[in-house]
Image 1 (cartoon, rainbow, N blue to C red):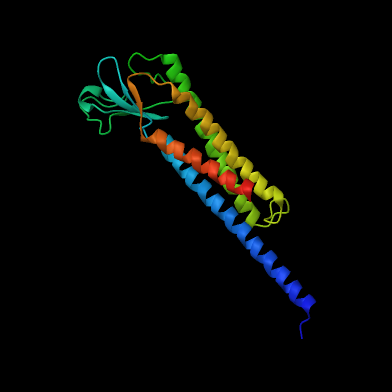
Image 2 (tube, rainbow, N blue to C red):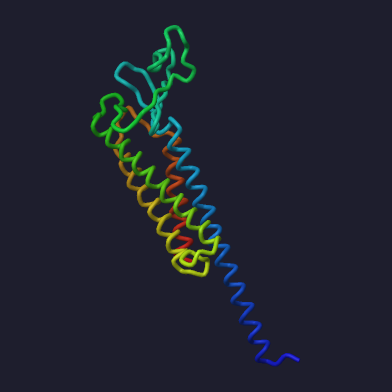
Length: 208
């Protein structure tokens, strides 16, 4: 027959087990949110729809971090490397560090800095979010320093997700001054969503 002490012991064990399961659910949810942030961040990086620009000769194009495409294909001309007489299906060109991506009546130095800053922040955020995911997976393997019972495990993930959020904010703030003939497009807003989700993931782990 169980005594009152035995019942209290079982109740405490059950409460502790329920609390541990709640903590694990919060951690798993935060990691899932960060994974969505990672996907959105990469989707925004590799789509050529960061801003819409109008050039001096009236042509319009969409510019991304690593690629730009003409919106007026008839006036855009073939992309570099296209063979004579060969139609370019997408009429796009690759961009890189220091690319001239300025639109009409805009400072080329400012626009170059904006895109270079955003490229760097995007890469750092991708690395930080991936590091957080890797930390979660390593914790499931039962490593001593990264076990789910260790506080360092959650702190490492929270730090990684917070770093991703911080650098994305820095990159996005550089676009607060865009030229009169440039407008933000959906890839930029996609990256804002990635930033907010990274912030949410870090906040969940810190609150937990």
